[in-house]
Length: 418
Ligand code: PA5
Image (cartoon, rainbow, N blue to C red; front, side, top):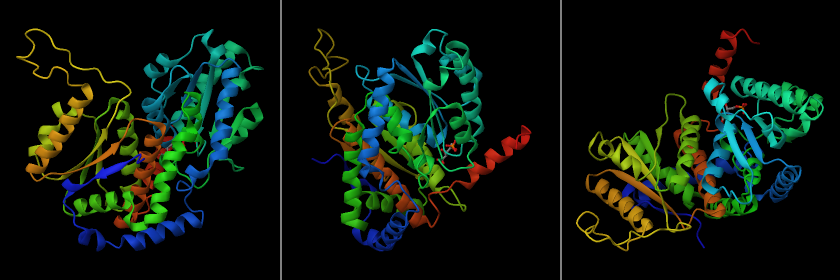
């Protein structure tokens, strides 16, 4: 069964054009990066023992009476887990998982547990560097509230930290001194590529998601990349996007037709922007969702400047799909009795792709059979691979983020922090 397919007819790219890009050399460079251990995200789907360990730790928290997890992290330390949980949450099996990323007073007030709720609440702090201002300040405020509620002695059992495990990381030193559980952030994986590491998998396991199934979908895509090499799905997608970018289509709209994949769009936006926006180059990603944004931005995409590509995600089957019931007199305004909601979403998505093509606009469509752990794992792995290929084609380092780090340093200076 294919967890992920790509229809790229409307990108209007020929095999000869793709063949001229040097994708084979790009593949070889990425393989060198992987085998030399310089980048770890490619191998994460095969780390089943780590996934099993994280699932056991999540069950242990539940057995200890924890029913709510507050995840404190920002950017790549948060968006992947949020996307997984929004897509795949299983309220019957898992904890309630909430996220807080910034020291925004209102957002903080909204998530702050009451004195009695703290007994059943755990804090997960995710920061690779251990020094990003936003999460560390929110963490310290939440920790103080936790201590006020459960006491200094008992509070450590409510805190888990995911961070760089090397000596010299001040958050690691603090966590050890306080007796918090520490899960290592893989050293050779950056935030936006970390969704299939403990950063995404631990919160997902706490939410009741089967993380082994997630990895098995991602494995398929990684096998596809290793076997098909420059002809793999991700290379093909990246090649089409690169050619469009070179031709002046510098905005990339990512638009799943599924509300549950809305946060995958936000995750993709970070992946594309932080990985590719450097050295004066890089497409501008736009996070979107269909069909809502058909009624918000499509007019611009269809008939505004021809400087965009659109990537849709089609879900073939939803867990349930109501039908439009017949109603006397309703034929005049809704002449579709008996058609399912899924039929309508599919018709909308196909109609938009066709209409865009008629106006010469470029689009591609990923399709997943359903929103399952396997298909979401496959989609995310494919997009990370595509970002890596795009980096090679654009000749930028997809795995660093010097601009983000510069902003962090300036903010610390303004606050008088070291
Ligand atoms: O993808 C990235 O590397 C960034 O978005 C980081 O995840 C983000 O800046 C947070 O950094 P840290 O995990 O060090 O707190």
